[in-house]
Length: 443
Image (cartoon, rainbow, N blue to C red; front, side):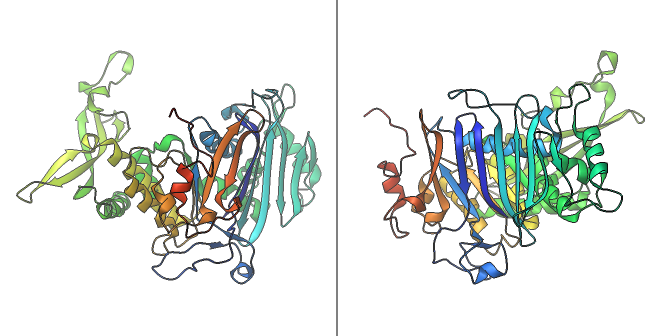
């Protein structure tokens, strides 16, 4: 589980930390079918007042304050780990010097051990990559000065690892590091160190980021199904449909439909194909597969079913549903997949196109032992203030983003304000400006 995120010199951010520790003494413990407040990183943390973390971090703030910058920084950290510098833009704080390295550092727990993994980079290279476990370096690369001795094993000694690092992670022309050593080791030397593999898999498989809450529904279904098997797909759609019905979206059920078509109908010159006539929305809910051997193409799409006044089911193309239904469907698929695997889901503008009661219901699922059985965490930005007066959430669960010319984007946690108690109406005080993080509109 995630403990802390530190971001330096990224867009409007000078130096910002997002602390996900539980900041209070009293909390609701996990019980079957009930709500809870904390996640335990270790067995010891169940009795000791440490290493307890929140399942939900609600981040508020006015437009252009830097909320999305926090989400983007997390996304680029994941992309940098997975794919290297080529897929990550260099976006330093231009209101400051507009130069210097961007630093991203995550503290997290896996198998009851605390890890810290940090990367700093500029437009040309990764300048620093350090992974520690329980406070001790596993490996470090700082300005090309490498230390791999704590992970060397047998023939894979320091000299061998340095050589492979230079071959796999550095550019041939000027010797700049452009790929992470972590991804190289796990890909090319998977048996070298199990802890390294666990760390990489945490970021590669159990971490996902959605900007603008724009989750492709097909991707959500496949993530939840974990395969393209028709049976698994059907079960995933049914799981999403159950939640859809529970939040009172008027759809009886969904189905996954496969249909064949003649390639001659869409074939153009130079062997190109025009699928545009089959796409009714830009959301990507229709997938195509070509079989030139049989001169056919296969479409897979989602159908939704509503009941008419005679209680008969009427079929609709899913593209005909509202934007809110599309958002809810994709988001629910992602949420349910994280409940099955654990990990961290980060969503920007969580309440985009969603009714406030629907948003609150989905967020509260992360604090429900009925759903969140594997310590999944949700970090989200939003504007709807309704959950600020929902007693499910505590002072540990809210963060307010502000921006100034002097400090850039900063985050203040509700628990950091003096005199704040859980029995207060946080919404009223927030809208009065007591916690900042609001726009100053014309009176």
